[in-house]
Length: 108
Length: 113
Image (cartoon, rainbow over all chains, first blue to last red; front, side, top):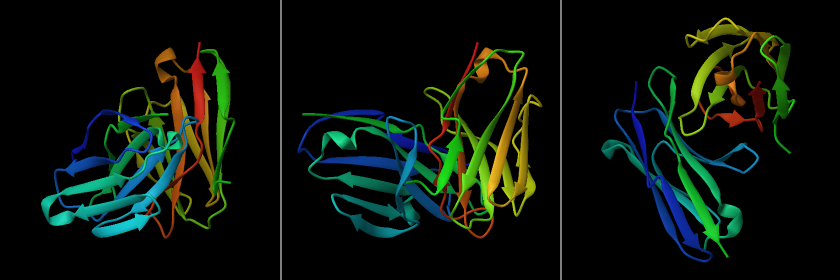
């Protein structure tokens, strides 16, 4: 299967700071998603981004499929951004592979 | 409000109990999934149903038994579980069959005593 590595594993930010989360994957993928897992356990869809760049408010994501990585940018972080961010890729056989996540803590 | 609803949100059961987890999706999707999330581990795929037919059983022990009566509902029947089965169980769905964008429910946190 595809190996998905996320970095950093843990991140602590002061409120208002910016950050970049990275997702590397080991093989060609059909699709890539970014999720935010809230404290209650739900995985919230952030981006469905097999390639290119998308923006949604303070968040944006860029996937460079040819180089097998994706970046999630969080600007002007807020305490509500705390949680775990997961990257998931879908291979050409419609199998999904998840990374182990980046745990983000935003302190006021 | 989520398009994928899971009940119960929390469940505590003994090793000899029989219980069920329920998932319902209101998105018109055709594929549904069960994932297991244990601490500090990636999400583990358990089962996949595509148009009500099971297409994936990822070497899951028989003490976990899935049921998909229609494309909107998915159950996970639990019996004679072990303490190491304690985890967050997540249901997901996707449109147009297996693959594509996944949408998750809030999860059912299971504790086996």
